[in-house]
Image (tube, rainbow, N blue to C red):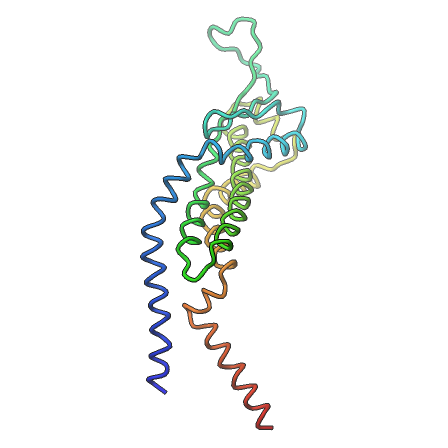
Length: 225
């Protein structure tokens, strides 16, 4: 019995070692590609964020423009205070957000997926594509709440009143911003990889072997009956 258990634990340790070494090698490359292609990866975030703002408050937001990997949100909020050199010109408030702060999970997903032993290339490509769609949603969510937080707390009284008029409570905005900045970008990508590769996780943790043994014991007891 002891020899059988020890021989079953060796492949698990080998898979874990292979995963760790491969992840350490591939993660820097994935982060490099992710940052190098940031301007292209942010494009869907721009259009999705613009769609959400137009559906949510069309009278409050004008357009979303892109400057490399940064998004500039042009509002229709006209500050009542004037600035030196402005004269009679009308000014609107603009908010610049960085979606890449919420998108590093794509490099994490790609590094983990590529490093997963025994996974077919087609499945790896599919998981990375689906992961990218998930990261776009996370980036849009984070950019939205960063913009709302900026208008409420740092853009002045006119912007603050405009956000309060939408019905969003300050405590709720603060909570959503903390979730979008601290928790969701770090937790969701890893959880996504675990869910998509639950069989592999079961193998390296021994849960799948234990489950198979239990089923075998039940089948054996049924046959004995």
